[in-house]
Image (cartoon, rainbow, N blue to C red):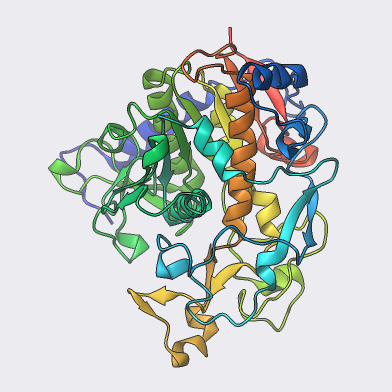
Length: 464
């Protein structure tokens, strides 16, 4: 049992924490019942896009982006379709910015079909990622991905997608332990990554503690990280997998300068709520929505139980060659309670946050993980290790090129919608008090269970 400073009884500390958690939950969407579906009037107007394009002198009449109408289509609902004609914009041999951890072909993966599945929404087409267009629209701006190694994978995907059209000598990369910066010199654009696996502070941010039982999260402090987010034009956050190391999380109030004594163990969904609310309060207090756009990527599922998808004799995600084709498949690697926390926190924020829901479409992709075609401790797995997938298959991270490229297609689509119809110049918002959500959090019965709004589906909410 942890030692506690002073003479404060354990029961008192526990009651204090629970009271604080209860206080956070009092900010609920008051008049909505637990069965309520949260629907709002859509934001997008097609003629606004066309007018803006004409003003800028570009002609994109046939471009897929302008065929996308968020009033009529949800990117969450769809299926994976095999398309051999797809040519990825990069490979792990042409893009030198990929970590070896996700370079599956370099690491010996013999099959390639996982690279040729494309996400097809039910009622529309997902716009292709246009690297030249996004670089033009981001000219002179900073884009920063913030989060864990899965967010780093999405960052590397985005870097490689835009790198494919940037000539040699007109780009640079500066890698750091916490902060890395890719620069497209011709466009004066930076695409950055900041390592903060919990978003809030922890004792494993810099020097990684391999044993999750030794990790302590400082749920009331984010400033140490957040000072690096100030002045960024576009922020895209994520945090999930590092919280999922057990049923409880060790949390600490106050400063690590006073040592690591005094922590308390609380249920993971409560600690996640506390940490996410600390982050949300920082965003609400420090982000000017007329200058900075904020995005949040939902949880990336893991695939460790092949029984989830009917492969009773399988070993984790090893040697899976096809996606799950059953509509609505949801395995044990995604926690609906945790996703409900995200939806609840976002709904109460004052600053607009675009929620990029990649969870359901990623649930199908049991074939896209790095599996045994990865590295461990900085070294590619040996033949002996590859022959032992039960202990060495990585069913959390994803091969690149691969699934995170689709995440970036969805991010790109939402980003272009913001840049094209809500802004003339990025700093001059015509609609700065809006949330544009592209997500479906729950079915109605799940919403009843967790007492959260059942879904935000391509919707807009304006704050007074």
